[in-house]
Length: 498
Image (cartoon, rainbow, N blue to C red):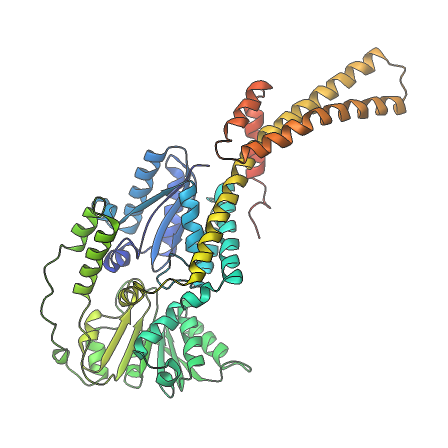
């Protein structure tokens, strides 16, 4: 196993860089295809969410793999390699496994314990399977990550360590008030009809808003979401769908707006928000006095390689706080929750009087100092145990083709000897011949049983990869035969599917 992951996330890069580096669905597919076309990767999968972009690959050379994957990420994200490099992190082999398992459990999420990441990991695996870029290693890895994530949520209280991004965002909008009390009777506008927007609509309905209006570029998807909200046994909230062109009109009647679309530009400008409230953009609150000078984000992260993690993190947080726009003054007339990446809502809207804006960046700030629950430590133990088990299974699987090739060779020797016996003792009847053949096979199986079982056990231990080489050398196995067994296992259509 030579698993490599190169990526960036909300922990390593400012939101402005994550926004620009976001990958559309078609770009993800092209990235995977180009990764396989380039050496040294033989498998690839991409995990792209609003908070992270990670490229996983099975490589045969570490340094060449890092250089190639970094270059490919830069090319397909549109962010120059020199600018992107300071924000990239690299994990290799067991550390890469540990990273993905931690991500699957929600330990690396902006809101610790959120479960939406499991669906995103499942989508990443499905794309790799559809494009045939995920082979044996990545199929096994992502399938196991899904199981580890589900185990963490079922066996621990990690869900209590944090809420979904939507719930957490609404809590920030409520500014300390009970969310249900804050939301009661409000009119909500949801922009977008994808998975996050659907979650937002359902969450708003549960909090007790009076009405939900859904706007989406494709009207049919907005109608479908409204139908789900209004169906018998559902939330019972009043809901209706509108065209995207009606957003500005709906904005004049809304109390809270949640936006999460796949748009590459702004969906709501500061001017549109101001117009809906009968304000001028000049009514924006004055920006507070400039914070003490700190390096630009790019400079901070360039120095992060040699500054202690704690110091670099503190400086990075200072940069983010210095660049968050001032919030408007006066009673909140319009609450805006922007969950999109790139962002949907102009940050300048936050400075308008009567407007409160919460976006991905401010959510990162709010959750950065959240206390770690005891459940998190329990999940970390699960992750460590599962990483060890995965590594043992992969090392054992590495020797399996050699063991299969050895038994195939032994079966061939038995068949050859039985054929020679037929020539020497032509008068043997079928019953006698079958009995002799069975006896010889039993002798060979018994001789091979203990060594092959033991070698699998030894191979599962750290440093056990050399046992496969020893078997091939001792029994003079044809490398092409072993490779053929590996290819047959890799091409099994039922492997890695659930």
